[in-house]
Image (cartoon, rainbow, N blue to C red; front, side):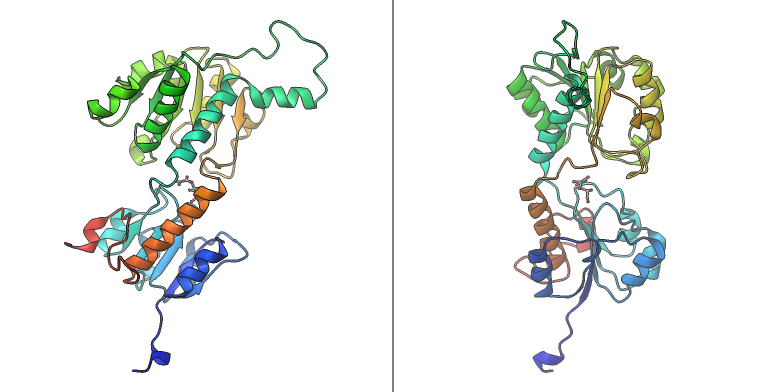
Length: 337
Ligand code: 8YV
């Protein structure tokens, strides 16, 4: 066979991404890109995936069993995100489809943002800015926009994975916070010790945290892990920050708790049903709302896109680690080394 007749495998890059990443993929694949950055879902996504061996996806695309049946040639789904709750991993594994994600490269950036959002909620930064811009700053007063301290307070972390630990480091080492956490399982004491982090049950976490930061992955088990009953356990002076996934917090219940001053303030980067934001949250002064940007620095988005591309190239048998994508979610699909 002559080189000119050799067909490159086809891949879909489901959302717009850095041109350099598309160019790198094009060295190995026939690439269908999405320069208009439309969100393709359901039948449209299945239509675009016809004949494709690989998909470069983001959290916006739902890859489920029905889609896999409709796209029998699909062999790799490479998500440009550490979270992969948009993908039915079991259905992929059952069909021998490798799934990959982008851990590690976004840990510190996401932790920076989580800490910033917690501080913004505690110190009422967004509310203060709205107050100033509205021309309401007429004079100093002793209780104007008073918030709660972050330094020396108790930081409660729900979900002590890589990002949770990075937030704990910032709190313990930078701000002298006492760190408590709840997780599916307790960390190795060697990881707890430098942070002085203490494993507690969920009820104690909710009762004792001055600032609760939620970093637990979304799954049916974590759906509405913090709802009305959990919020009722928290201190009236506490803040809650969610940088995990929409659906981990019951947003209407949180809005009610904020309105009734059952807790003091919240910082949210993720929402159930985003980009829709529950209207009750939009009316409240004591919640800082950001549009799912915790990983959004230029360097980190480049690193995430590069890692997703490395995964796709290797998963489809190219590049230096052909057949061994660097960060598989279901490595069992790859077989023994
Ligand atoms: C992404 C995220 O921006 O990595 C994740 O899990 O939530 C974010 O960093 C988003 O999911 C886009 O894929």
